[in-house]
Image (tube, rainbow, N blue to C red; front, side):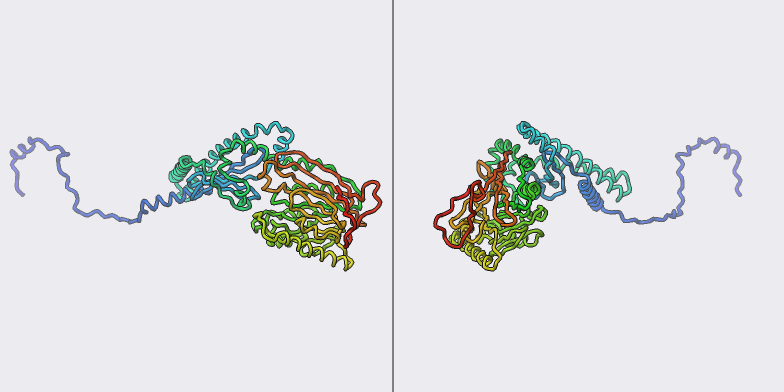
Length: 528
């Protein structure tokens, strides 16, 4: 060991000390031991796509569950709904006629409006207080505005709630769930802004019709005139929306004839032309008059397409057997569909059936002209069809099973059976006529029980609803009397019932004419 002199040690102690902070620290050169775990992280675009998928799905589920409102619009109950859509637009569903689509806007949401039903209490209030019709236009506008505002609020709540709930279920993190809800609200706001920016009021000029409404353009007329004269149509709308209720109200107060209990009551209808109100009116008359059988002399449909067949389903529940012959607006597709319905008896080619104590025979119209065209040889084909029916009637009489009532659609065909049957029923001309033909057969032509259906809006004065109750003696099976029933057309509330007696049943009559197969010396005087 080397000794250090004490003088040197004393000199070292006198030197100033260096601050510790300035003294460099020596790190250990021994490597630190650490364990690293490598976890693959999702790419940003994948996370964003997943979040968008959750938002869209959650918003859609929210709209499906609670994103609709029931809105009373005047006397009608409607449901307004927002639905996800690629093209946007507005769809108005009018059951049972079909749907009307408008390219009203471009956005990922579509507005659906369903016309559900006519509210009986509000409709009856309009019937009882006609003065309220003057304010119906403003009431409808106000109802639609309130409904749209309510739908917007409810849709926001539905979208945000649905996206937030699904985000919480998927991510299990409140922050992610709130982000999903916020993004959903932003998407809805963007959709609303896009719809507002692309709103196209001229879309009403180019509507698209589906279902039974596919015939509407040819019946309603030029859509451009509807827009340019919209004030007129708005005023008429107030009258049209209450029409069905007025018709129901009118039929509920019709007087009921009380003939002998053995009388057979037949309700004659014709040319319904797809008017859904007709079924309610027919059912009401069947109940009030205790009708035994309904006879339809054709043109129940308008185009005879398979799409229209569902319109016929209420026939099964009218409360009486339904005897039917084909009109020129009814196709063989229509005929086959009716043949499959219960309680329906389709007559064609002179076939005869006994129903409710009366024997009926009929033939379908040989023409099928839903476009209302007139084809060459149409009159000759009607006469030929009538001759075939007359031949079948003579065969029935020769076999000892005479027919009581014959049925054809067009009067020109019905005239060919003169002298072979006591009574023949027809339609087609949309107004009522009665005459006793040269050889004693009575011809009863019925008006339009559908008020000419959709065609009612074509003319300045709509056709009235016409039908009749025929009373037959159960023993002789001859016509004793008939009631002609006329209900006012669109916008009218009149109802008229008139009693008619055949000439042979009037006071002072002594003999009852009977049709014969040979010409009579003098024609019979037409009955009223």
